[in-house]
Image 1 (cartoon, rainbow, N blue to C red):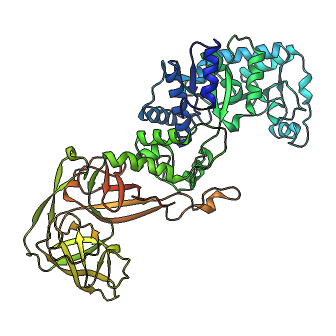
Image 2: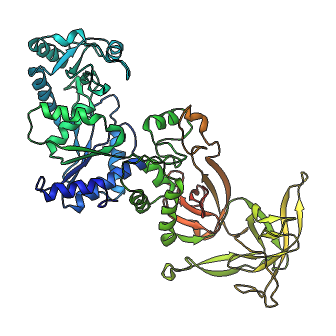
Image 3: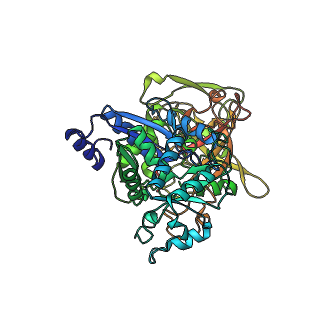
Amino acid sequence: MYTNNFISKIVDRDISSGKYSIIRTRFPPEPNGYLHIGHAKSLFFNFYLAKHYQGYFYLRIDDTNPNIDNDKYINAIIYDIRWLGIRWHENVKYSSDYFDYIYHYALELIDKGLAYVDQLSQDEIRKYRGTLTCVGQNSPYRYQSVKKNKILFLKMKNGEFSEGSACLRAKINMHDKSMIMRDPILYRIKFVRHHRTGNTWCIYPTYDFSHCIADSLEGITHSLCTMEFQENRQLYNWILKNITTDVYPKQYEFSRLNLQYSITSKRKISILINKKIVENWEDPRLLTISGLRRRGYTAQSIQEFCYQIGITKQHNNISISTLEACIRKDLNKKAMRTMAVINPLLVIIESFPEKYEEIITILNHPNILNMGTRKVIFSREIYIDKSDFREIANKNYKRLVLGKEVRLRHSYVIKANYVQKDNQGNIISVFCTHDPNTLHKHPQDGRKISGVIHWISAKKNVAAKFRLYDVLLNTKNIKHGDYLSYINQNSLVIQSGFVELGMLYAKRGECYQFEREGYFCVDTYNNSKGSLNLVFNRIVTLKHKF
């Protein structure tokens, strides 16, 4: 991905031709939400591209809009990037570092007759801009003198206009095929305190105006972004061409990441949060970096996913199973095996001594011996999962059935003899017998065993809640219509059950494979040390669903 794609080939040519000796890339997030999996793709690419060519990678917070800039978002962005293992050159940079420079470049454009102060209302500006099939009209303020525009722009800066009553626009071409080139807004008025500059400014540059200038000031060589900014490249180049600079970064676009059954739009995620469909930006159902981390995804699995999908210009809709396969592969090597019963059913083994408890030693990982062993307690009463028992079943059902035998994982072979039901006919317990000669062994007489199921001692265990996460949407891709109507109502199911006694002091964020159930992570929100608040998030099932 990082060195075998169309952009890296461009960089190769630029270096071999002597155009650049040092490569500089950057990641410029807007602090209006948390980073998501799509940002991770761009982050890893920009970082490793610069690293491969022994260049520099910068982190720049695009804080040009004080209405949405929020220290909470900035702190989350920086934390997520560090957690992903990415390090940037020098200190974190901010677009607000360059406000003085950007202001002077605006004056330069006015002096050249390439910018003017427009006093049309926002609705009038939209109307004058035209449509995709109808060219725009020139604003009546477009013909003001340079002197008048400078006076009006200074009044804007001094707070003598109200919000929305004036703005600075580039003078390009209202008949251009591209809507972006029809005299775009460069500065707007906002009487909002800025998180870094305070009340120094009441006019703020737009993203399109500021980010190409910041790229130039930082000496960025290759400005990399996703395809939705392809048309913006015309304005990017126009601004750099018409200001005084010797540094002309080149913009290149690659396809954005679209992942099936998911939402990554920050605007849509904000709506989900406001409507309380999800908890917050760190909800494990979201593909934000924070949500993925809380769910139990590792930085290594996210990087592997980004590496696998690669960098192209081709529009794609990546299968969620690709992401899930990456975390399974990573945790298969790291996660300790243990047992948990998520939907418990009581089993009473009548042939086992009533007050006797047997300690069984089990490997923590079947293939990695240096992960050690653990001890579990086997007793007369155990819990199994309700789905692992049926009174009557066909031959394809390889679990516990009345009159048949099944092996308890790491333990004995048991046989179901009869059940006890409540007044509504629901099974509340299963009565069994065990073969005492089958601990870690197959029956000596060669009789057929239905299958293997997991269990937990009913006497010595830890109560826990299990948050079973599924995809957020019940459709692969939303092309039309209201995305809220596609919300998967079963994206979170909470169950109460039990884990092994040894999990009593499981640490926040630790990942485990619950045998036959999937990979789970100790939730970082709802747990305190001990069993009272033990909550596990399901990271992924053992086999892919899609």
